[in-house]
Length: 189
Figure 1 (cartoon, rainbow, N blue to C red):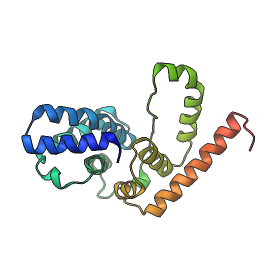
Figure 2 (cartoon, helix red, strand yellow):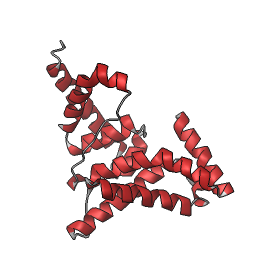
Figure 3 (tube, rainbow, N blue to C red):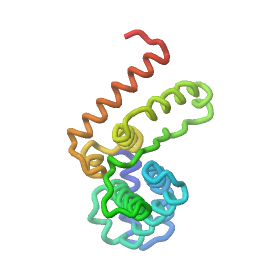
Figure 4 (spheres, rainbow, N blue to C red):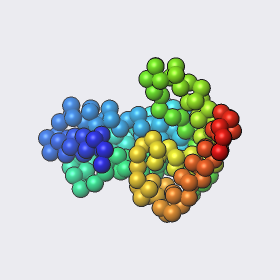
C-alpha cells in the first residue's frame, strides 16, 4: 500500500469520525484531480468531468460514516466516477445502455517538474503519442495501472473486466509502446 493511500485512508477515517470539514478539504485535494482526469478520459469535457469529480467527492462527504467500511476509498471514488460518467454519456446519447468499449479514451501522462520537462520533453511527447496510438481499452488500463497505481483486481472491478483481460491489455500496451519507442529512437533490439 502506498503512502498516499495510507494517508487517504487515515484522512477518511478522521473525516468520518470527527465530521471535520478541514479534513474533507485534504481528501478533496488528494482525489479531485485524479478523479477529474479519469472522468475526462471518458467524457472528453472538462466541465462535465469537473462536475463528476465534485459530485463524487461531495458524495464521499455525505457518506463519510459509511466510508469506514470501505477498504480503498480511491478505488471506490473511481468506480463512482465511472458510473456517473457513463450515466452522463447515456443521457447525452439517449440510450439505456452504454459499454466502456464504446468510449474513446484520451489519456494524458502526469506532468513532471520543469527540469524533467526540459530534459525529457521529447521522450514525454513521444511516449504520449505512443500511448495515444494504443487501442482505447489498452490506454485506459495503462493509465489506471501505471499512473493511478491501481492493482489489476481494482482495475478489473472499475472497468468490469477480468484480471486476465487487464493483464492482457497491459502486456499488449507495453509491447506496443516498447516497439514504437524502439522505432522512434532507433534503438537496437
